[in-house]
Amino acid sequence: MRKTILILTAMLLLALPTVAQKYACVNTDYVLRSIPDYTSAQKRLDKYVADWQKELSDKSTELDAMRADYEQDNYLLPENLKKRRQEEIKAKEQEIRDLQHQRFGAGGDLDKKRAELLKPVQDRVYSTIERVAQEKNYAFVFDKAASATLLFANKKYDISDEVLELLGYKPNAASEQQSKDDKGQEKAKKPSNPEMRQPGLEKNKRDVMPPMGAMKGK
Image (tube, rainbow, N blue to C red):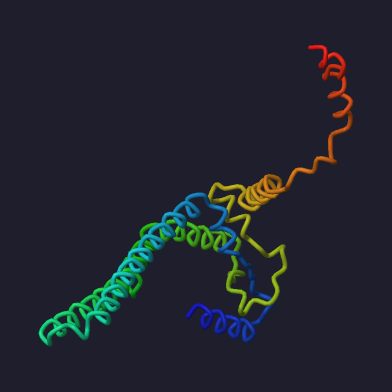
């Protein structure tokens, strides 16, 4: 739907006189990733998703065990017990389907949690974009995150940093922190090389260590 709107908007722009129109672009992914409240909310949402997936996985494991037990006992069971076990397996299958829909279906727990955790921040961002557009008299603001239809955008028309500043956040802060974190991880993973020592290190060791003869005397 979003892609269709962008395509229709682009077609409309081509049909309008370009002299009187002012355009801008924004990268909503960049803006949202630069807001700590949003990244924190996304991590919380990811935790919910991981827990729900584990819940479904555990129930699927239970179902597999029920099927395996039934296959093993099938030849020894009377018809009435066969039918009961089959019904139990079908009930477990339906339970898993219902839970799948409850957690991840349309209007389910994931949609509700996304609206609860992420939508307030998204609404703030979109309101700020609208404010910038009105103040600068932009006729249209394209989202660079929807790159399927936006092939090129001049940086001088990008209002992403301006939106962040109005929201009270430092532009590029998230990227700078991520770069620092990446460098720290690389440094921690880098194996130590005994031959690459600081200048003077071996000399300092010789100054501190006593002569071999003195050590034998002791």
